[in-house]
Image (spheres, rainbow, N blue to C red):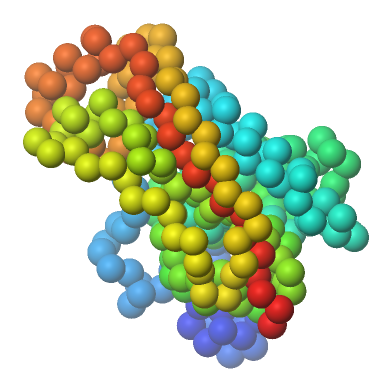
Length: 275
């Protein structure tokens, strides 16, 4: 499945991953592999930092976004991937700490499917955190704009709040493969936006067209998410980019007073066009 990020030759996986041009990549003690060459990094430590990722892990442990997770699973379980023969190859491009990958993997397995799961993120801290979970998925450090995956390998790809290139996603998906895309809705976390910006703007609507893909379905899920304690409020603030725009006094005030926030998402299912 994996390809060398330097020469794009297939990688043979073992204690060290190696291509036929003798480029090699060591497996870390946690089991993940760094496939992001130094010359392709935009900074020394790209992606979300450890504090944001730890906060996101804490927040997701409270299952505050459970309605979103349930909707994602519902869309997948009603899709054509359920009729595929053999194992479902599931890949999360921009996997973060791995929560959404494991949600969808668990839903597929509960429905009787065998799943081969993997994910990538440009943040080494994210992949390290994801790899600490039970080792039933393979994680690599890689950019979503340059996926180290061979052509036509993936049945179902996840793109949850992550950037990427449509041509790259289409390349690694099998014929008729599916892309589950989650984006913020217009009102998502508006209370935080109002605290962070003088003129808060709604999130843009997701595109109706993507090159190489056909839109199969789109659903909006919008609810008031309850924050029951300081730990939940602090985790939410810390995991968002808004935290950097808030002074300490404002953050402390929100941690005391924020009892609920608008959760607003679009869940879109795309199918790769016939190659």
